[in-house]
Amino acid sequence: QNQNTSRSNAIIDFLKKNGIQDKDIRTTNYSIQPQYQYDKRPPCPILSDESIPCYAGVNALPRIVGYQVHHSLEIRMRDLNNVDDMLQGVVSAGANQVGSILFAIEDEKAAMASARKQAIEDAQKKALVLARDLGVRITKIAGFSESGGGPIYYDRGYGSAQALEKGGMSAPQVEPGEQEVRSVVTIAYEFR
Image (tube, rainbow, N blue to C red; front, side):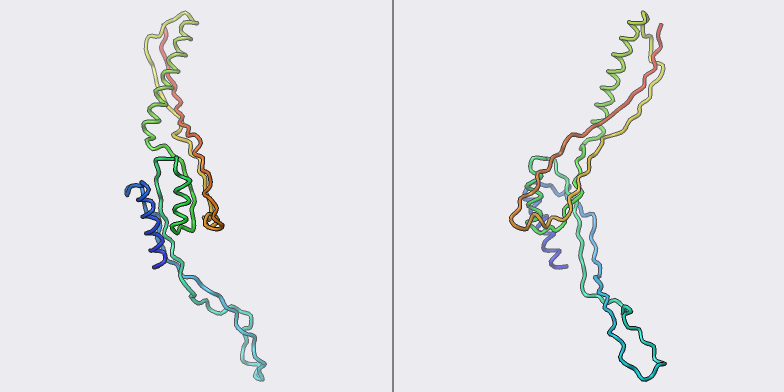
């Protein structure tokens, strides 16, 4: 537990020194679990009394040989330009597992509102073209509905970070790609 505390504190200190705010560092798990060893019983001695049962090769009761401590942190980074350096830094500070990298849109509501606005404008343009081609005019909107989802996330998980420590290997180049927000609107227009 002392080793884990030392490493965890070093990682958190590294993050804060490199611009990660307190509100963007969150503990998601802290657990201590016993580690068991299952020993085989020694072979049965040669017994003269056949009435004494022998359980050779049957596993004895497990015994605790140590404990494993897990301290998981979730880090939110807003500057994607230094993700690579941050990965290398947390491993150097003592992290032995790094994973579940997820790129997300920080303000999903604003992104959805913008996508909806664009979808409505596109629908209005198509309705005006259709009205012109039909020789009618739009009098009012008779109905509206919206469907579609929020952002589409691409999860990029990375396994053990031990490879980053060994042999002076550098951090992987992490590419955020592109996030997509969709809004599908259906507008019913009344024509005259």
